Length: 95
Image (cartoon, rainbow, N blue to C red; front, side, top):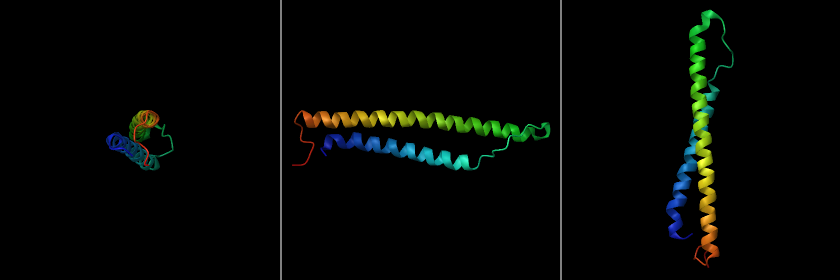
């Protein structure tokens, strides 16, 4: 790989690791979720807690989807740049 692809490739790798780390964090939080719905008036504190937890999971999901889309688009653009450079005669592939 040519050195002018190294920094963007490292940037994409860091972005991909961030997506993976966020997915692992989401899975660890999701495993602590209580699946029972508390509707009784005596369980108001539990209902509030569940609502806040669900909102936090939704925010993480939204961020994860956005980061995944950015990582995919960045990876496709990097691949297109790599192929274009090879096509135009750049010394990308080892000889």
